Amino acid sequence: MALLLLAAGASMAVPPLVRAQPAGAPVRTLTLDDALRLFHERGFDLVLADTAVAAAAGDLTAAKAFPNPVIGGGGGHTYDYRPHGADCSGCSQRQWTASLNDSGLLFDLVIGKRRLAIDVAKAALAGAQHSRADAERTLVAAVKEAYVDAVVARALLDTSRETAESAQRTADLVQLRFHAGDVAEADAARAETSRLEAEQAVDAAHEVADAANVALAFWIGEREGSVDFEVARELPAPDEPPALATATIGDLVASARQKRPDLAAAQAGVESAQSALALERRKRIPDVALTGGYTQEGTGQEALQPPTASLGITLPLPVFDRNAGGIARAEVARPAQWVRRPKLHPPKAGEVAGARAAPRTALERVERMNAGLLVNARRARDLVEYQYKRGAASLLELLDAERSFAATRAEAVQSLGDYWSSRYRIEEAVGMEIGS
Image (cartoon, rainbow, N blue to C red; front, side, top):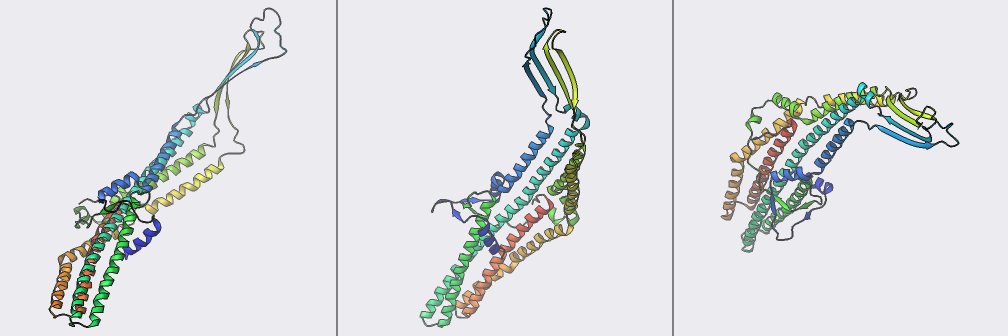
């Protein structure tokens, strides 16, 4: 059922299947390591997360920058001015001015607006980096599950083909007996129906396998949904890592608290909101700028404007705007971050417990299959087929044995896929890879 849903979802979410390789061309085998490497190189969502980190790094660079000083200069000419007397040698009709403004740099170093802006940008960058790591955590798990789905779909396709071949052999045998007059026409119809049903199952399994491959291609960054690979024919044998076998729910929750980047991102969000509020409150203090100037129009005592240096300050008067809007926005953002933090921290023990139980249950199913269920189903099918050929069993018994064996094989494949999918989900839940 899960694979059928995957097929329906993939047909809507990704481009239609495109076979990139021409007929007869060799198709490369894509391993799980290959899929993860391609995802890290060109996965869509990871590229977007990297962009967000780069933007936050740019904001930090901008926050660290000192304001540029402003310099000015000018010249002029005074009309209808005539210096008096021959001793006014330094008088001139030309005027020269120069000015320098520190753009509030010195005063800002005193009151710390720049420092607070840097704190905000640092926390935002840390949050973006943790969010990127969290995106990688969840997306890597999704890529692994997509790979498992593709392998399971291919294995089920192989199983359905073998079942169709068996149904074809049975139908051929029944047809020979029917023409010899040894079986009734109803048996021939039943065998033919079983053969056609098996062929239908092959077509359905092929569609699911194609959809699983397209979904995997989308995850690893294929821009046009092209599929020029094939996945492995089977999954590795299950092996419960000792670290997982001996870990308690408390151990896994503690690991999640330390390792999961979404918790660190939430903490960075709180710190950023606190710094942003402090910065907005500090902005109520006007930006005081130091100014220096120089003016002259002539050089002597009789000059219209002897060389004159000046020093002063400029500041806006906080009469109408005291940054009430910025403070209000920052005050709203801070409790929002506090609400988000406990929502994630600590991780719910029930969530981790559910993720912990799933691989163990799937492992028990796989072991039960390998311990005898699959072998017994195959032996029962072979024995009934042998008996049918010798007239000791009915066609209905043979068809039932074949269906039971096919269903058992499909269940074995799906159980192994469930184990690996649940392994990757618990790695996602605790925020780290659990090796063998």
